[in-house]
Image (tube, rainbow, N blue to C red; front, side, top):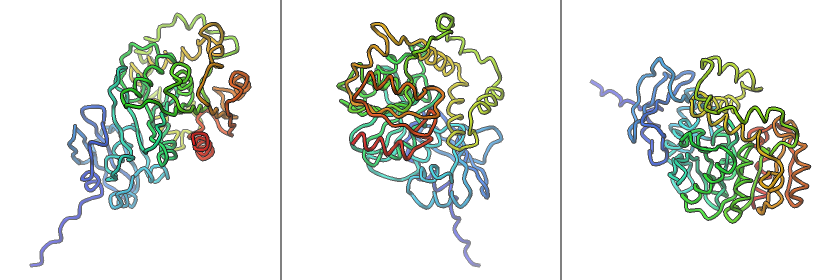
Length: 388
């Protein structure tokens, strides 16, 4: 009687066999990641500490889901290069939780060396800060905008990692960082957290790249601690309003703790958000919406969102501590990237910045509020040129 052929491990089993927990801190005791797609029997990977188990997919929604066809999964299981290439090309979709999805890809890539993508939580004097880190060379700190997470800089990590040690962060109270609910949520609060992160990583200085609110935080780091900053790249940065703020008086007395209460059921919130954002069928946009909802649908996430948004609106433009009064004292060299179709930070702000910082550099792109996602080639080419 002929001997039976040995069983061939499935793509999911081969991926799990490569799982390296030192690369990925999941940030919770247990997580369930679903592997699915056309021509594939869906399976759940349960991660608990340093152990992983493969189980048949359950009926309830997983913490994260990675979707690709059977051929793509076979290639990922066979080729030990980073699965991020499949994600960036659109062959692989990640839903619900990019932190978990990207972390799983990094931990199963089987690539070695100090520049490999790592997902970890860093203990700082300002609490735990979650990071994506890749590359070697001069460090570059990447700071996301309001309602976003470190995942909004994944294309930037890919673009800069060959030459720089890129460190994309979740600001305190956002994404997977600590949520103490005791912060002031203004630019100074976040800037102190960024210098605490540099201290915890043993970095004397770093280039700082920020988008939207993250751009405002980057400016604040440069104003407060210029010796810690190499160069600044400011992507549609939030700036203090120059026009009258008709709701300012009322907003000062609205407690942001109201965010601890969710006034609408989750399905309704999701529907409203997806209907409000154009291009929600785009994979990057869909992933960004998932990240926003993941934070906003938690009490602490809502409170932080409302508090940070209020500080952006209420920031004083003039006076001894006013933003536009202080801006001319910014010492690090700065590149400002503006979107001609940006509805949140209009291009008209560029004129005021040039008056305050005549030696700053400026780039206008045909995009909205997130240049690194909407015009990645042009934005990253400009970053590389400016930083080098």
